[in-house]
Length: 171
Image (cartoon, rainbow, N blue to C red; front, side, top):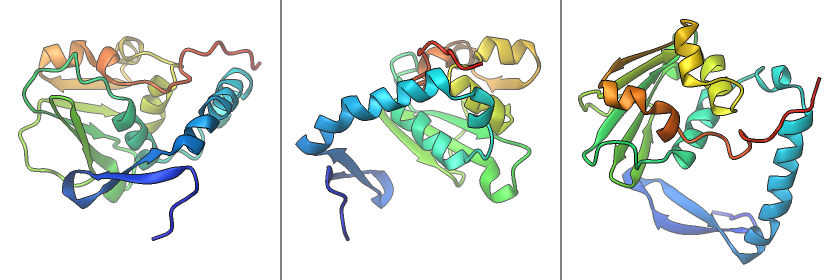
């Protein structure tokens, strides 16, 4: 297996996956990459970002940025259902157990704590900081079924894009 310069293999992750972390050279690039991302969030029209969406990219970013602290200390299983997508890409599960977060594209077989149903566009807008969980629920574009405590705290555990707080200046 070839590795990109700037990353190195870390410890094996759950279910045989491998996690990567940045090398010192990769870490040196972090401020540059983050600066470009902040520039894009500020100046690129958000509607352009909401085209050609990929549920796997969104879900992996959500997994990486999720904040487990607001969730119960026992395992929580949260399913995301994007009804407009083809069956094979429609369902995703986040498994949060303490500080460990795992992502599944196939039903892991655990009892659900929360079912999140919305379009991929809606969830992407929330993740990008262009919309909020409360606002999308009020508009009827997001439904949350299950544990009310997990549903109420979704905005705090969701783990938004690192660029979500960037002030927008694009017209």
